[in-house]
Length: 441
Image 1 (tube, rainbow, N blue to C red):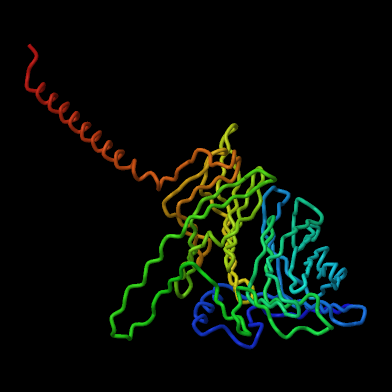
Image 2 (cartoon, rainbow, N blue to C red; image 1 turned 180 degrees about the horizontal axis):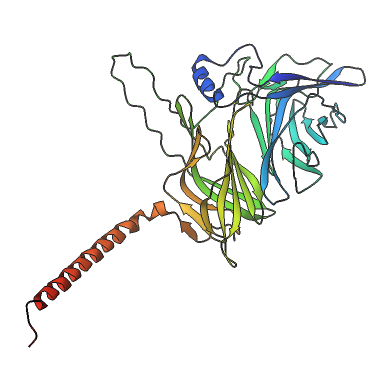
């Protein structure tokens, strides 16, 4: 016998009574001002054994960001949220010889499950399985591929002592095959002993030992404009934000690399105060999809930022094709509860173009205007989204910003050419005047 229920939560509100720390409130309010909150649902499963005693308990929130291909061969991003009506058929208590299984079904053919195994002293999540159904036209309008798609990801939960409850208020991510699974406010205990939920908690790395989530989003570099002017004491100038570290990212199609990207990324969020965030490549994961005419690179910094780049192919002549950057999407998440703080998209780009089979390079800083409040600065960019051969970049088409070194000789050459033209012109005019002083005999 099993019992499951779900309750509606407003993601912008804290899941516990204690709010974020005072030092974090200005930053949180700054980010929350860029967008409204949205509704989601929490799921609670209390699985019973044959004696009607609890054997597996879970309470958590999750949603899914999915990239899918349309009939026009473009790729679109969609969000799949949990509804209020969730079932849990197929869930299993588990034993010393059998894995425990937590399984839920929702919407039009979507399902999610995680299995737990135990040793003599601990239990842990082994694999997470997510199936989404593209026949759900509400979530996947104009999907090219119809039917269920299953993603299996190895779990990242650390081993938990038996009789302990695993708790993680902060946001966690799983990326695989164009799907980002987002979890927060997680409470789970597998292999419950004697039907009694444990009182001792095992916290995830993102949480502090306190009972409330108090860890602000982690960013590589943050600067805010100062508003304090009353202090007569000498002040030091704010430390300039360094350029971001260059990350090396790649995608595979089967066993072959289909996309290569080297780039340093800096996010600029401007509301009442400017906020600069350097994306840390050491904690950033790359995912996406490669196609013949469309490719999408999704970067998840592991904290609170998701960035998507979409490239397409265009015909420039009967025999030549070029690729270019067409769309950029930025999603900022509240790491405390997983809510979307801001989601900005610009699908009208026509940048970073190069002939198909080559790569595009720009070492100097470039700025991508995503919205009125969000910009992306790129550094040391080298990108090839199509026709990668032997895991190496092809010949690069360099941007005009990198051509500064050849501008000087061009300008000097043009100046010399102009000077020579002036001298020649003056000589011709002088000769004509000298001829005018003689008469024909």
